[in-house]
View 1 (tube, rainbow, N blue to C red):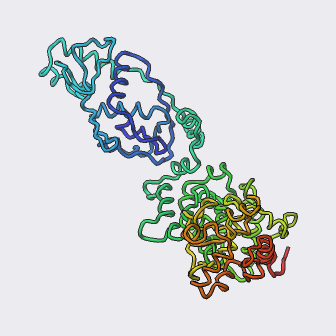
View 2 (view 1 turned 135 degrees about the vertical axis):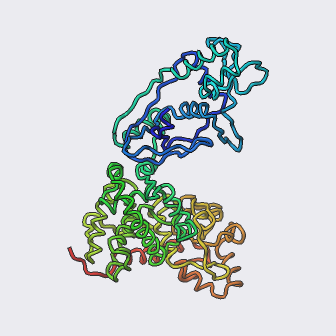
Length: 530
């Protein structure tokens, strides 16, 4: 078999070998009886893909230099089962060892016997031969251990096994995306291989020790030798965004077809620069915009143009003017829900805006200006899935909100920010209090009624109490309460209607405060150049 010669390979986007001895026995019995066992489909290419390096306890050889490999697209389980039986391998399945050397043929049975002639263990069979011995033993060894009639039957079995006409289709030298499309259609019931899985296979390079799946894991989780996105609180960034960041850097386009066309050598060479650009972008979000965790980001895709900027800026800190322009872009893109649709085309446009910012020129937003109004703010429903609302949450976070009861810095955590009812979100006028007093749920769930709080404050101390009551309690434990509330853009408890539980006044006053800050960011003081 060409597996031994290093020609046939199993790409890593295939699932692990899961067949047991019973399934393998049925397959071998079908071959002996001459039954069809399905077609094997291979992709022939000289591209080096990420592949399985061993099967069971057997290490697989490398592809001979200069030769093309045959990557299995369909038939992996069958092919691996046959290889395991031939080599007598020991595989581990859920901490259980499976010895394929134990498959035996009952020599008292005719090959065309109606029932299976293959058993998973010898049991009560009086005269038998293992499949491993059948295929690998020399005729000299067989003569020593078996009768003339048994040797005749063994020869029949051997000829049927080794002479079976396997049905194979070889797809020659097609691009990897075509090969993966074939794999998807025949193996996964319509579940398409992700772009990341394809790029993991395409960019794999053993000599350069580059494995995109491992690189991504290190980027997110770290390896103990450097920083990670998890350390920075940005571990929720998906691999699709990382691929798009690479493509933005290399070709200023992030469409699927553009990513698939990226040359392996350029992709690998660019990886360190892109990773550095991503970390600079994350540092910028955390330090300048004060967005401490990725769950607050209006869009993960914001990392694409910002990492592009820092790669092109060679890691330097933005100038005063660049900083203003970057801040303006962040808020404009977030408040306009820019990337809710048409991400690929819009990123291509925005990369040109980044090119202008790099030259300290203000990009044009002509025809796409956004002028937020107070009425719009007051009617905006709170949702953790909408970019506009998350932008307002980023504004709240920018002022580094303090705990109501202790004036200590609030810790924001990705796991506490996923849903509207998560621990870090608090309706300043509790929803239950408002609905009990005649307000509709839509009115109670306004983004202007949201504050960022400690994870235990909601249920432990506030519950459904009106703000006049629980704020009075907090004033006893927190002498800096007035200052604390300013960190929540609630400048004055009295004029904001807090002491009289005046929800309508609170929404209007806080809305005006929030509006002022958003307008400042959307319209910074700078001279535009066209």
